[in-house]
Length: 182
View 1: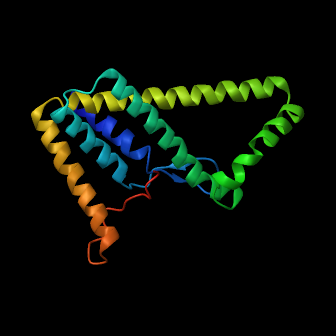
View 2: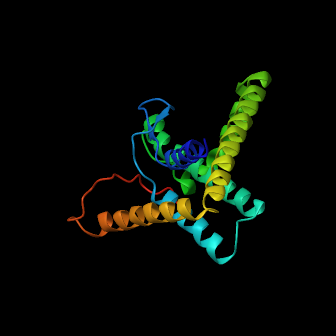
């Protein structure tokens, strides 16, 4: 069972940064891409384990928070073009957020605004707790030598392939990597 839960955790972490938009909806789907950020995070966890010791709960929580931010950044990055016809620009678009909030406060029924806020908090909580579980599961796995060596080798190969694909046209374009969120 532990191998299955580790596979699920690895899949969740990778898929959470590689999903694509189902145009023209806010829905997303996974298309089989790989995330170089995921590979780097696994390598960093392994290095932390080898140099400092097992990551503390605080370190794992911080990593889960950062990962959750990346997930929502990825969602905004792949969904905005489908819904708005262009990418989100933090410089140009952020200044209009207070105006949009004020408009919604006047135009929408209070119960609807409350329902949307509760839904947003619920989605954020579910995503964070899922990511936190997956990060914890990977952390447990790397405390054992064989999974640590296997994960390090696979993550290192992924990073090398990603770098090779971006530096040379002669490197095979398989596997495909999603654009990094960071």
